[in-house]
Image: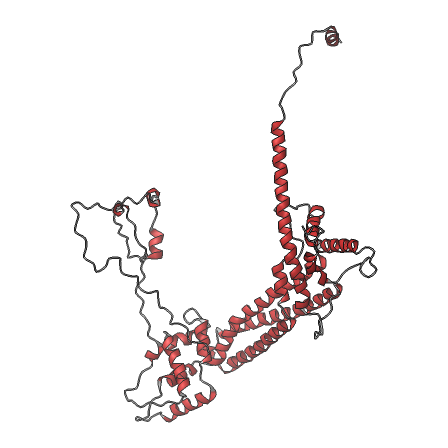
Length: 474
Protein backbone atom coordinates (compact mmCIF):
# COMPACT_ATOMS: atom_id res chain seq x y z
CA UNK A 1 0.00 0.00 0.00
CA UNK A 2 1.10 3.62 -0.54
CA UNK A 3 2.69 5.51 2.36
CA UNK A 4 0.11 6.91 4.76
CA UNK A 5 -1.15 10.42 3.93
CA UNK A 6 0.14 13.35 6.01
CA UNK A 7 -2.00 14.04 9.07
CA UNK A 8 -4.83 16.35 8.01
CA UNK A 9 -5.36 19.61 9.81
CA UNK A 10 -1.71 20.55 10.31
CA UNK A 11 -1.20 24.19 9.43
CA UNK A 12 1.98 25.99 8.41
CA UNK A 13 4.73 26.47 11.00
CA UNK A 14 4.47 29.54 13.22
CA UNK A 15 6.05 32.73 11.87
CA UNK A 16 9.64 33.53 12.78
CA UNK A 17 10.18 35.99 15.59
CA UNK A 18 10.36 39.63 14.66
CA UNK A 19 13.80 40.86 13.65
CA UNK A 20 15.87 41.93 16.60
CA UNK A 21 13.91 39.84 19.10
CA UNK A 22 15.93 39.32 22.25
CA UNK A 23 18.28 42.22 21.64
CA UNK A 24 18.37 45.22 23.89
CA UNK A 25 16.42 48.17 22.44
CA UNK A 26 18.43 51.16 21.27
CA UNK A 27 18.47 54.18 23.53
CA UNK A 28 15.40 56.42 23.17
CA UNK A 29 15.77 59.49 21.00
CA UNK A 30 14.92 62.84 22.44
CA UNK A 31 11.69 62.94 20.41
CA UNK A 32 10.25 59.87 18.69
CA UNK A 33 8.40 60.42 15.41
CA UNK A 34 4.92 58.90 15.48
CA UNK A 35 3.74 56.59 12.65
CA UNK A 36 1.93 58.40 9.87
CA UNK A 37 -1.15 56.13 10.06
CA UNK A 38 -3.44 55.70 13.05
CA UNK A 39 -3.79 52.41 14.88
CA UNK A 40 -6.70 50.26 13.69
CA UNK A 41 -8.87 48.28 16.08
CA UNK A 42 -10.97 45.71 14.18
CA UNK A 43 -14.35 44.78 15.70
CA UNK A 44 -13.16 41.15 15.91
CA UNK A 45 -9.73 39.54 16.25
CA UNK A 46 -8.45 39.01 12.69
CA UNK A 47 -6.22 36.37 11.15
CA UNK A 48 -2.61 37.65 10.97
CA UNK A 49 -0.74 38.40 7.77
CA UNK A 50 2.93 37.62 8.29
CA UNK A 51 4.62 40.32 6.25
CA UNK A 52 7.68 42.46 6.90
CA UNK A 53 6.42 45.95 7.61
CA UNK A 54 7.81 49.14 6.11
CA UNK A 55 7.23 52.44 7.91
CA UNK A 56 8.33 55.49 6.02
CA UNK A 57 9.09 57.54 9.10
CA UNK A 58 11.76 55.03 10.15
CA UNK A 59 13.45 54.99 6.75
CA UNK A 60 16.57 57.00 6.14
CA UNK A 61 17.11 58.86 2.88
CA UNK A 62 17.68 55.79 0.68
CA UNK A 63 15.87 57.25 -2.32
CA UNK A 64 12.19 57.50 -3.34
CA UNK A 65 9.96 54.58 -2.44
CA UNK A 66 6.84 53.48 -4.28
CA UNK A 67 4.94 53.54 -1.01
CA UNK A 68 5.34 57.32 -0.88
CA UNK A 69 3.00 57.61 -3.87
CA UNK A 70 0.45 54.98 -2.84
CA UNK A 71 -2.65 55.98 -0.87
CA UNK A 72 -4.84 53.47 0.90
CA UNK A 73 -8.34 53.61 -0.57
CA UNK A 74 -11.38 53.89 1.64
CA UNK A 75 -12.68 50.36 2.18
CA UNK A 76 -15.91 48.98 3.64
CA UNK A 77 -14.57 46.26 5.94
CA UNK A 78 -17.86 44.66 7.03
CA UNK A 79 -17.70 41.65 4.66
CA UNK A 80 -13.93 41.40 5.10
CA UNK A 81 -14.27 41.04 8.86
CA UNK A 82 -16.73 38.18 8.44
CA UNK A 83 -14.45 36.43 5.98
CA UNK A 84 -11.09 36.88 7.69
CA UNK A 85 -11.87 37.06 11.40
CA UNK A 86 -10.20 34.46 13.57
CA UNK A 87 -12.45 31.44 13.90
CA UNK A 88 -13.19 29.80 17.18
CA UNK A 89 -10.40 27.45 18.13
CA UNK A 90 -11.49 24.00 17.00
CA UNK A 91 -10.93 21.07 19.20
CA UNK A 92 -7.95 19.22 17.82
CA UNK A 93 -8.80 15.59 17.38
CA UNK A 94 -6.40 12.98 18.61
CA UNK A 95 -5.03 10.27 16.35
CA UNK A 96 -7.48 7.41 16.12
CA UNK A 97 -4.90 5.24 17.86
CA UNK A 98 -5.40 7.37 21.01
CA UNK A 99 -9.17 6.78 20.99
CA UNK A 100 -8.73 3.04 21.43
CA UNK A 101 -8.41 2.26 25.10
CA UNK A 102 -5.13 0.79 26.16
CA UNK A 103 -5.25 -2.15 28.49
CA UNK A 104 -3.93 -1.56 32.01
CA UNK A 105 -2.38 -4.99 31.93
CA UNK A 106 0.87 -5.25 30.06
CA UNK A 107 -0.10 -8.42 28.21
CA UNK A 108 -2.16 -8.04 25.03
CA UNK A 109 -3.08 -10.48 22.27
CA UNK A 110 -1.18 -9.91 19.02
CA UNK A 111 -2.67 -11.80 16.09
CA UNK A 112 -1.08 -9.85 13.23
CA UNK A 113 2.46 -10.31 11.98
CA UNK A 114 4.95 -7.70 13.16
CA UNK A 115 5.15 -6.08 9.72
CA UNK A 116 1.37 -5.96 9.34
CA UNK A 117 0.86 -4.69 12.87
CA UNK A 118 3.36 -1.89 12.26
CA UNK A 119 1.68 -0.86 9.00
CA UNK A 120 -1.76 -0.67 10.64
CA UNK A 121 -0.26 1.19 13.59
CA UNK A 122 1.28 3.84 11.32
CA UNK A 123 -2.07 4.28 9.56
CA UNK A 124 -3.87 4.71 12.88
CA UNK A 125 -1.38 7.35 14.02
CA UNK A 126 -1.81 9.33 10.80
CA UNK A 127 -5.62 9.46 10.84
CA UNK A 128 -6.93 12.19 13.15
CA UNK A 129 -10.55 11.06 13.04
CA UNK A 130 -13.11 9.32 15.19
CA UNK A 131 -14.47 5.96 14.16
CA UNK A 132 -17.91 7.60 13.87
CA UNK A 133 -16.46 9.93 11.18
CA UNK A 134 -15.34 6.91 9.15
CA UNK A 135 -18.69 5.20 9.68
CA UNK A 136 -20.55 8.32 8.48
CA UNK A 137 -18.33 8.58 5.37
CA UNK A 138 -18.90 4.93 4.43
CA UNK A 139 -22.61 4.63 5.18
CA UNK A 140 -23.64 8.05 3.79
CA UNK A 141 -21.07 8.25 0.97
CA UNK A 142 -19.92 11.58 2.39
CA UNK A 143 -16.25 12.46 1.89
CA UNK A 144 -16.35 15.98 3.35
CA UNK A 145 -14.61 14.84 6.56
CA UNK A 146 -12.93 11.62 5.44
CA UNK A 147 -11.35 12.24 2.04
CA UNK A 148 -10.95 9.65 -0.71
CA UNK A 149 -7.22 9.29 -0.04
CA UNK A 150 -7.92 8.24 3.56
CA UNK A 151 -10.66 5.85 2.42
CA UNK A 152 -8.19 4.33 -0.05
CA UNK A 153 -5.65 3.77 2.76
CA UNK A 154 -8.30 2.24 5.01
CA UNK A 155 -9.45 -0.07 2.21
CA UNK A 156 -5.92 -1.23 1.39
CA UNK A 157 -5.17 -1.94 5.06
CA UNK A 158 -8.51 -3.61 5.91
CA UNK A 159 -8.41 -7.01 7.60
CA UNK A 160 -8.15 -9.96 5.26
CA UNK A 161 -10.44 -12.98 5.72
CA UNK A 162 -7.89 -15.06 7.63
CA UNK A 163 -6.97 -12.15 9.91
CA UNK A 164 -10.62 -11.36 10.57
CA UNK A 165 -11.41 -14.97 11.45
CA UNK A 166 -8.66 -14.97 14.08
CA UNK A 167 -9.78 -11.64 15.53
CA UNK A 168 -13.44 -12.69 15.71
CA UNK A 169 -12.56 -16.00 17.35
CA UNK A 170 -10.66 -14.17 20.07
CA UNK A 171 -13.49 -11.68 20.63
CA UNK A 172 -16.01 -14.53 20.95
CA UNK A 173 -13.82 -16.57 23.29
CA UNK A 174 -13.06 -13.52 25.48
CA UNK A 175 -16.75 -12.82 26.20
CA UNK A 176 -17.76 -13.13 29.84
CA UNK A 177 -14.14 -13.77 30.86
CA UNK A 178 -12.82 -11.31 33.37
CA UNK A 179 -9.20 -12.35 32.99
CA UNK A 180 -9.28 -12.45 29.16
CA UNK A 181 -6.37 -10.71 27.52
CA UNK A 182 -7.40 -7.76 25.32
CA UNK A 183 -6.49 -7.37 21.66
CA UNK A 184 -3.59 -5.14 20.72
CA UNK A 185 -4.52 -1.74 19.25
CA UNK A 186 -4.09 -2.63 15.54
CA UNK A 187 -6.30 -5.69 15.96
CA UNK A 188 -8.93 -3.61 17.81
CA UNK A 189 -8.88 -1.04 15.00
CA UNK A 190 -9.41 -3.64 12.27
CA UNK A 191 -12.22 -5.19 14.29
CA UNK A 192 -13.97 -1.82 14.68
CA UNK A 193 -13.73 -1.21 10.92
CA UNK A 194 -15.32 -4.60 10.30
CA UNK A 195 -18.29 -3.57 12.43
CA UNK A 196 -19.26 -0.92 9.86
CA UNK A 197 -21.98 -2.49 7.71
CA UNK A 198 -20.27 -4.09 4.67
CA UNK A 199 -17.26 -1.81 4.95
CA UNK A 200 -15.18 -3.48 2.23
CA UNK A 201 -17.96 -3.64 -0.39
CA UNK A 202 -19.12 -0.08 0.21
CA UNK A 203 -15.66 1.48 0.11
CA UNK A 204 -14.78 -0.44 -3.08
CA UNK A 205 -17.86 1.07 -4.74
CA UNK A 206 -17.12 4.59 -3.44
CA UNK A 207 -13.54 4.47 -4.71
CA UNK A 208 -14.52 3.03 -8.09
CA UNK A 209 -17.17 5.70 -8.54
CA UNK A 210 -14.56 8.40 -7.94
CA UNK A 211 -12.05 6.95 -10.42
CA UNK A 212 -14.46 5.87 -13.17
CA UNK A 213 -15.21 9.39 -14.40
CA UNK A 214 -11.51 10.31 -14.39
CA UNK A 215 -10.58 7.22 -16.45
CA UNK A 216 -13.41 7.57 -18.96
CA UNK A 217 -12.68 11.29 -19.43
CA UNK A 218 -9.01 10.57 -20.16
CA UNK A 219 -9.96 7.98 -22.78
CA UNK A 220 -12.50 10.39 -24.30
CA UNK A 221 -9.95 13.22 -24.63
CA UNK A 222 -7.41 10.97 -26.35
CA UNK A 223 -10.09 9.65 -28.68
CA UNK A 224 -11.17 13.19 -29.58
CA UNK A 225 -7.59 14.13 -30.52
CA UNK A 226 -7.30 11.01 -32.67
CA UNK A 227 -10.62 11.62 -34.42
CA UNK A 228 -9.80 15.30 -35.01
CA UNK A 229 -6.45 14.48 -36.61
CA UNK A 230 -7.93 11.75 -38.81
CA UNK A 231 -10.76 14.06 -39.90
CA UNK A 232 -8.30 16.87 -40.78
CA UNK A 233 -6.02 14.61 -42.81
CA UNK A 234 -8.96 13.07 -44.60
CA UNK A 235 -11.04 16.13 -45.45
CA UNK A 236 -9.13 19.36 -44.83
CA UNK A 237 -8.87 21.58 -47.90
CA UNK A 238 -5.50 22.90 -46.67
CA UNK A 239 -3.99 19.41 -46.32
CA UNK A 240 -5.13 18.50 -49.82
CA UNK A 241 -3.74 21.73 -51.27
CA UNK A 242 -0.34 21.21 -49.61
CA UNK A 243 -0.12 17.62 -50.84
CA UNK A 244 -1.16 18.82 -54.31
CA UNK A 245 1.70 21.31 -54.33
CA UNK A 246 4.21 18.69 -53.25
CA UNK A 247 2.94 16.42 -56.03
CA UNK A 248 3.12 19.17 -58.65
CA UNK A 249 6.63 20.30 -57.76
CA UNK A 250 7.79 16.71 -57.37
CA UNK A 251 6.47 15.73 -60.77
CA UNK A 252 8.11 18.77 -62.31
CA UNK A 253 11.43 17.95 -60.67
CA UNK A 254 11.13 14.34 -61.85
CA UNK A 255 10.11 15.31 -65.39
CA UNK A 256 11.50 12.91 -67.93
CA UNK A 257 12.36 10.26 -65.39
CA UNK A 258 10.53 7.05 -66.22
CA UNK A 259 10.51 5.66 -62.69
CA UNK A 260 9.72 8.83 -60.72
CA UNK A 261 7.96 11.25 -63.07
CA UNK A 262 4.27 11.57 -63.90
CA UNK A 263 3.20 10.47 -60.42
CA UNK A 264 -0.40 10.56 -59.27
CA UNK A 265 0.68 10.44 -55.63
CA UNK A 266 3.55 9.52 -53.33
CA UNK A 267 4.22 7.63 -50.13
CA UNK A 268 4.34 9.72 -47.00
CA UNK A 269 7.94 8.92 -46.13
CA UNK A 270 9.08 11.70 -48.53
CA UNK A 271 7.34 14.43 -46.54
CA UNK A 272 9.91 14.67 -43.70
CA UNK A 273 12.70 14.72 -46.31
CA UNK A 274 11.50 17.82 -48.19
CA UNK A 275 13.52 20.06 -45.88
CA UNK A 276 16.71 18.27 -46.98
CA UNK A 277 16.20 19.08 -50.68
CA UNK A 278 18.08 22.36 -51.17
CA UNK A 279 17.90 24.98 -53.93
CA UNK A 280 20.79 25.38 -56.34
CA UNK A 281 22.37 28.17 -54.34
CA UNK A 282 21.66 26.32 -51.09
CA UNK A 283 19.71 29.37 -49.93
CA UNK A 284 16.40 27.60 -49.35
CA UNK A 285 14.86 24.15 -49.14
CA UNK A 286 12.08 22.66 -51.21
CA UNK A 287 9.89 22.71 -48.12
CA UNK A 288 10.38 26.43 -47.50
CA UNK A 289 9.60 27.17 -51.13
CA UNK A 290 6.40 25.10 -51.05
CA UNK A 291 5.30 26.82 -47.84
CA UNK A 292 5.94 30.28 -49.35
CA UNK A 293 4.15 29.33 -52.56
CA UNK A 294 1.17 27.99 -50.64
CA UNK A 295 0.84 31.20 -48.64
CA UNK A 296 1.16 33.46 -51.71
CA UNK A 297 -1.30 31.57 -53.90
CA UNK A 298 -3.68 29.63 -51.67
CA UNK A 299 -4.14 31.60 -48.47
CA UNK A 300 -5.91 34.95 -48.72
CA UNK A 301 -5.09 35.70 -45.08
CA UNK A 302 -1.36 35.08 -45.39
CA UNK A 303 0.63 37.61 -43.38
CA UNK A 304 -2.38 38.40 -41.20
CA UNK A 305 -3.39 37.24 -37.71
CA UNK A 306 -6.38 35.46 -39.25
CA UNK A 307 -4.10 33.10 -41.19
CA UNK A 308 -5.00 29.50 -40.28
CA UNK A 309 -2.43 26.69 -40.17
CA UNK A 310 -3.45 24.20 -42.91
CA UNK A 311 -2.14 20.97 -41.34
CA UNK A 312 -2.97 19.19 -38.07
CA UNK A 313 -1.09 20.72 -35.14
CA UNK A 314 2.28 19.03 -34.43
CA UNK A 315 1.32 18.52 -30.77
CA UNK A 316 -1.87 16.66 -31.73
CA UNK A 317 0.06 14.51 -34.19
CA UNK A 318 2.70 13.69 -31.57
CA UNK A 319 0.04 12.65 -29.05
CA UNK A 320 -1.68 10.52 -31.69
CA UNK A 321 1.63 8.83 -32.54
CA UNK A 322 2.04 7.79 -28.89
CA UNK A 323 -1.36 6.09 -28.70
CA UNK A 324 -2.12 2.42 -29.20
CA UNK A 325 -5.49 0.85 -29.91
CA UNK A 326 -4.40 -2.06 -27.70
CA UNK A 327 -4.09 0.35 -24.75
CA UNK A 328 -7.59 1.73 -25.34
CA UNK A 329 -9.02 -1.77 -25.52
CA UNK A 330 -7.16 -2.86 -22.37
CA UNK A 331 -8.32 0.22 -20.41
CA UNK A 332 -11.94 -0.24 -21.46
CA UNK A 333 -11.83 -3.96 -20.63
CA UNK A 334 -10.53 -3.14 -17.14
CA UNK A 335 -13.25 -0.53 -16.64
CA UNK A 336 -15.86 -3.06 -17.78
CA UNK A 337 -14.46 -5.68 -15.38
CA UNK A 338 -14.37 -3.22 -12.45
CA UNK A 339 -17.86 -1.97 -13.29
CA UNK A 340 -19.20 -5.53 -13.19
CA UNK A 341 -17.42 -6.10 -9.87
CA UNK A 342 -18.88 -2.86 -8.50
CA UNK A 343 -22.33 -3.92 -9.63
CA UNK A 344 -21.91 -7.28 -7.86
CA UNK A 345 -20.72 -5.58 -4.65
CA UNK A 346 -23.69 -3.22 -4.66
CA UNK A 347 -26.09 -6.15 -5.07
CA UNK A 348 -24.47 -7.81 -2.06
CA UNK A 349 -24.95 -4.64 0.00
CA UNK A 350 -28.60 -4.33 -1.14
CA UNK A 351 -29.41 -7.90 -0.09
CA UNK A 352 -27.55 -8.07 3.21
CA UNK A 353 -27.84 -4.53 4.60
CA UNK A 354 -30.48 -3.61 7.12
CA UNK A 355 -33.16 -1.15 6.02
CA UNK A 356 -31.51 1.47 8.22
CA UNK A 357 -28.22 1.36 6.29
CA UNK A 358 -29.60 0.83 2.76
CA UNK A 359 -29.95 4.50 1.82
CA UNK A 360 -28.45 6.74 0.53
CA UNK A 361 -26.07 4.05 -0.80
CA UNK A 362 -28.67 2.29 -2.93
CA UNK A 363 -30.07 5.40 -4.59
CA UNK A 364 -26.68 6.91 -5.37
CA UNK A 365 -25.16 3.68 -6.68
CA UNK A 366 -28.12 2.81 -8.90
CA UNK A 367 -27.89 6.25 -10.53
CA UNK A 368 -24.11 5.95 -10.97
CA UNK A 369 -24.22 2.42 -12.40
CA UNK A 370 -26.88 3.30 -14.99
CA UNK A 371 -24.88 6.31 -16.14
CA UNK A 372 -21.53 4.46 -16.11
CA UNK A 373 -22.88 1.58 -18.23
CA UNK A 374 -24.12 4.02 -20.88
CA UNK A 375 -20.83 5.96 -20.91
CA UNK A 376 -18.77 2.80 -21.22
CA UNK A 377 -20.93 1.46 -24.02
CA UNK A 378 -20.58 4.77 -25.88
CA UNK A 379 -16.79 4.71 -25.56
CA UNK A 380 -16.54 1.09 -26.73
CA UNK A 381 -18.52 1.96 -29.88
CA UNK A 382 -16.48 5.14 -30.42
CA UNK A 383 -13.25 3.15 -30.21
CA UNK A 384 -14.47 0.69 -32.85
CA UNK A 385 -15.54 3.56 -35.13
CA UNK A 386 -12.22 5.41 -34.67
CA UNK A 387 -10.21 2.28 -35.43
CA UNK A 388 -12.20 1.77 -38.63
CA UNK A 389 -11.65 5.42 -39.69
CA UNK A 390 -7.91 5.14 -39.06
CA UNK A 391 -7.52 1.93 -41.04
CA UNK A 392 -9.37 3.49 -43.96
CA UNK A 393 -7.14 6.57 -43.69
CA UNK A 394 -3.92 4.54 -43.66
CA UNK A 395 -5.12 2.63 -46.71
CA UNK A 396 -6.02 5.87 -48.52
CA UNK A 397 -2.45 7.12 -47.98
CA UNK A 398 -0.98 3.76 -49.05
CA UNK A 399 0.83 3.26 -45.74
CA UNK A 400 1.85 -0.34 -45.14
CA UNK A 401 2.53 -2.05 -41.80
CA UNK A 402 6.12 -2.21 -40.62
CA UNK A 403 7.84 -5.57 -40.23
CA UNK A 404 6.22 -7.40 -37.32
CA UNK A 405 2.98 -5.40 -37.47
CA UNK A 406 -0.30 -7.03 -38.49
CA UNK A 407 -1.89 -3.65 -39.18
CA UNK A 408 -0.51 -0.14 -39.57
CA UNK A 409 0.11 1.24 -36.09
CA UNK A 410 -0.75 4.76 -34.99
CA UNK A 411 2.96 5.37 -34.38
CA UNK A 412 3.99 4.31 -37.90
CA UNK A 413 1.42 6.57 -39.54
CA UNK A 414 1.46 9.67 -37.37
CA UNK A 415 5.22 9.85 -36.75
CA UNK A 416 5.70 10.77 -40.43
CA UNK A 417 3.01 13.43 -40.23
CA UNK A 418 4.34 14.77 -36.93
CA UNK A 419 7.83 15.32 -38.34
CA UNK A 420 6.48 16.93 -41.52
CA UNK A 421 4.01 19.18 -39.71
CA UNK A 422 6.71 20.33 -37.27
CA UNK A 423 9.00 21.33 -40.16
CA UNK A 424 6.13 22.87 -42.13
CA UNK A 425 4.93 24.99 -39.22
CA UNK A 426 8.40 26.37 -38.57
CA UNK A 427 8.61 27.61 -42.16
CA UNK A 428 4.97 28.71 -42.13
CA UNK A 429 5.65 31.00 -39.17
CA UNK A 430 8.78 32.46 -40.81
CA UNK A 431 7.04 33.13 -44.12
CA UNK A 432 4.00 34.64 -42.42
CA UNK A 433 6.23 36.97 -40.43
CA UNK A 434 8.13 37.94 -43.58
CA UNK A 435 4.91 38.65 -45.48
CA UNK A 436 3.61 40.72 -42.59
CA UNK A 437 6.81 42.79 -42.60
CA UNK A 438 6.52 43.28 -46.36
CA UNK A 439 2.88 44.34 -45.98
CA UNK A 440 3.80 46.89 -43.30
CA UNK A 441 6.74 48.21 -45.34
CA UNK A 442 4.54 48.62 -48.42
CA UNK A 443 1.92 50.48 -46.42
CA UNK A 444 4.57 52.80 -44.96
CA UNK A 445 5.97 53.56 -48.41
CA UNK A 446 2.50 54.32 -49.80
CA UNK A 447 1.82 56.65 -46.88
CA UNK A 448 5.21 58.34 -47.37
CA UNK A 449 4.57 58.88 -51.11
CA UNK A 450 1.13 60.29 -50.40
CA UNK A 451 2.62 62.89 -48.05
CA UNK A 452 5.32 63.92 -50.53
CA UNK A 453 2.87 64.76 -53.39
CA UNK A 454 2.36 68.58 -53.81
CA UNK A 455 -1.05 69.75 -52.80
CA UNK A 456 -2.65 72.38 -55.08
CA UNK A 457 -6.13 73.45 -56.13
CA UNK A 458 -7.40 74.83 -59.46
CA UNK A 459 -9.38 78.04 -59.26
CA UNK A 460 -11.23 79.48 -62.28
CA UNK A 461 -10.95 83.15 -63.06
CA UNK A 462 -14.05 85.25 -63.56
CA UNK A 463 -15.16 84.67 -67.12
CA UNK A 464 -15.24 88.07 -68.94
CA UNK A 465 -14.75 87.15 -72.60
CA UNK A 466 -17.33 87.37 -75.43
CA UNK A 467 -17.67 83.55 -75.48
CA UNK A 468 -18.52 83.47 -71.77
CA UNK A 469 -21.08 86.31 -72.17
CA UNK A 470 -22.76 84.51 -75.05
CA UNK A 471 -22.81 81.32 -72.94
CA UNK A 472 -24.56 83.14 -70.13
CA UNK A 473 -27.22 84.54 -72.53
CA UNK A 474 -27.91 81.11 -73.93
